[in-house]
Figure 1 (cartoon, rainbow, N blue to C red):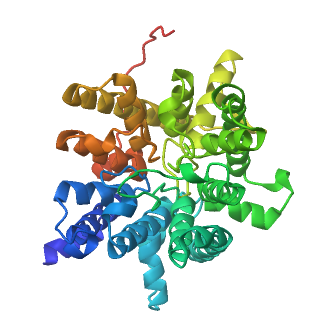
Figure 2 (tube, helix red, strand yellow; figure 1 turned 120 degrees about the horizontal axis):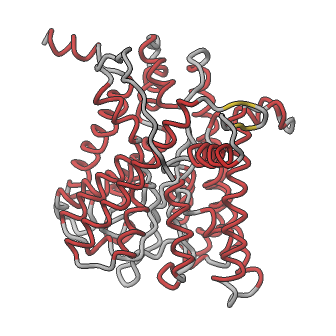
Length: 445
């Protein structure tokens, strides 16, 4: 016992984050296996339960069973709790319970919170956690209240639960829906394609949750004084705007030109926003062109912003890589943002993250394509959705075998926890070498 306590005290924050997510996934899977969790009253196979639990905790949205028609009210409740925990972060939720119980937060816990929230400093981290909780529940409540009249009009009293479920799922960028039926499963929001209330509310919740709590704190503090924002907040807001506008213009002119103007605008904006990393869809994705699918794959891999409810490589990673490329093109030594230099270590991390995501994305698709005998393009879409924790699908997830499901589970977990977090968790005990090997030039490009 003493050895266990000794080891526990020396767990790094990255190890705590990784083990925390894994623990919640396992508990969620065991709860979903209970007969009370399914509508048919039978035990759900472990592989399906752990897949659903992983997808919920990692706020992805890929499912092997339709959430509405397979899971009972109890099962849907478990999924929603897992989504909320995954969206806020396991560490944040744990610290919140500690604060509510009156316990003091240790220095180690504050350090773990800093890493989990991608906060720039440890000071004020508890106050920032309370800010996250207040903002989260306030925005989710507002989203539910706005959508409630529409859902209640269509489903009666059940519409209250549907409004709450979809509000939390959207804010946490999860993409789970409960609109499917036994005859028409996996519908997502296609039946509300031309409903402005549902579309605009869901889009707002996705963007709000995806740009990060640090950005919202900046907005609350500095209001419209953009120059006073942190450099990171400026980058996130600019890149987010670009990643919404450019795809929306493409979808408007090339993918949804057959729709009326109102439906065309809503569909274009929705499909530009949802791949990063929400997973809802209002259009039939199987009817998109090859270019449209490629656009969505790229957006899914980029994902949301650090310190948010979203996954993926992150907008800041993408921005740093682009800035570094421009610096090389201009023969500059360092990349810059808004008059500030980007440290070389940040560029290295961004490059490492890119390589890791591309490797996971390609490797996972090759394995699934080989095992299932499916076209590689469809598998690329599915693995990008998994590693980007998006949840969009071309309809193959439910029919995949156990090996392919395991591949997607691994990708979802890595996409949410973060590849670098796992690396730091595994190798943080290694001492950093101060010696350097002699350099030699190598030609690239």
